[in-house]
Amino acid sequence: MNIPQPSPLELRLSAYIDGRTSDDDRHDVEELLVNDPQARSLHDALKRGADLGRRAFDDMLKEPVPLDLVRTIKNAPLPRRAVRLPQGPRPMLSFKPPGLQAITACALFFVLGGGIGYMIGGNPAVPQFSMISMPGASSRDWLDDIIAHYRLYARQTNHLAEIPAERPADILEWLTTNTGVGFRIPDLSDSGLTFQGARLFAAGGGPVGQLLYRRADGDGDGDVIAISFTKIRPDGNRSIEEIRNDTGLVSWVTPLATYMIIGPSSAADLDDIAAKAAGLI
Amino acid sequence: MTQPSPSTDIRRDLVALLPRLRRFALTLTGSAAEADDLVREAAGRAIQKSHHWKGEGRLESWLFSMIRSTFVDEAKKRRRAEGNAAGDAATSGSSGPSKKDTLACLPDGLASVFLLADVEGFAYAEAAAILGIQPDLFAARLCTARLSLAAAAAETSERRA
Image (cartoon, rainbow over all chains, first blue to last red; front, side, top):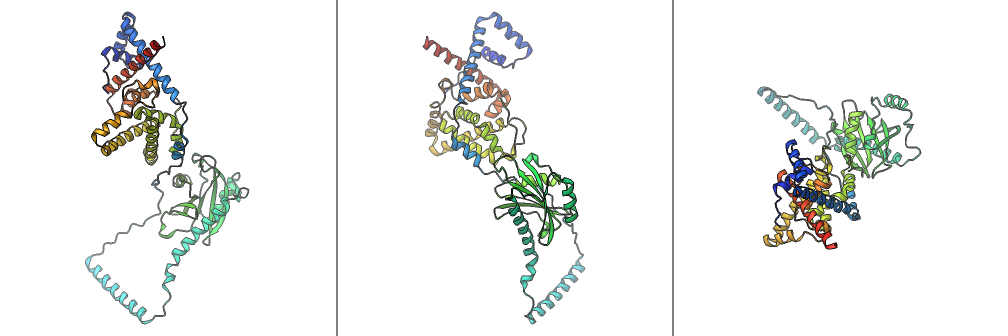
């Protein structure tokens, strides 16, 4: 459909209605409106058209929104966001041996490797290789302990925390003394989380401090989110983000401790909370 | 008009703005069913790209732009699928059936111009950017829309008389 072009006068009047004219032009238009009945009539028509259209569009808001559309949007999965968490220190190694040293080292390793291989081949009664993988298994064990504690206490209504939120000084002293990790109690009210208290437990043979929060609004109303910290280091000193037993865990490592955010796997904002807590704790 | 504050979960803002998003989509598609499909598609894109929204300016502006670009993309897809001739017919044929009587008098493309300026209260430049046209062209279309609506109102009152 061809759109009819308005005349210059109509354009000026339309712009005048929106206050989009220069001072000079505004004076001209105002004079025109006083002296020219056609301009006055056009101005009135433009205003009348705007009022009519506005009313028609306002009426459209009264129509009900389809429920399936609301549901589709409410249940749409949120994208996973890459959150930069603090990383553990990475040693900077600069290893550039000169040529002669490199050749000597290669020869030495060859002789050593050959010797060890000969000894292992000649003595089949060596210990099982499964022993070598024990550190990895123990790392999983202590994370499993932490998840198990979360799952046990997250369902408690009356006994969620060992020390209630009303005694922050007691919490700081109790957990710092027993875990050896200095910390602050982060205020996560921006994320809709209310601090409930703290608890101390053991995981993988080491003490772990846990701060407990309850979600006060949104879809996950009532969910418990926990921040745990310990001196135990995960394998490779690296951050972990995973789901086990319907429980989500996001961890980050600092030179002094390992921190974890634990919550229900349905909580899409665990990494977001982790990023906030990392800056506050 | 209330301005929703940007929250961490864009889905809540989308639901709160849904009636206005549907209304804008209807100015583009002309039919309620197509408008709902368009909003569904655009809302999905907005959720996936929510990290691009930095909380600056009005969220509606970003969402309206998303709806407009989704509409253009869908129209292109439809044209490609149906062939040029059939596609043109489909695009022009989509206007009107569910638009309110008062607004049905507006030539294609004018209802969204009018909505953004006179109802949603966007400045010419921002509204023109949402629709992907020049501000001068936007001003001309807004003027035409107002005149068309005034003419329709006059016609209606004459008929009643």
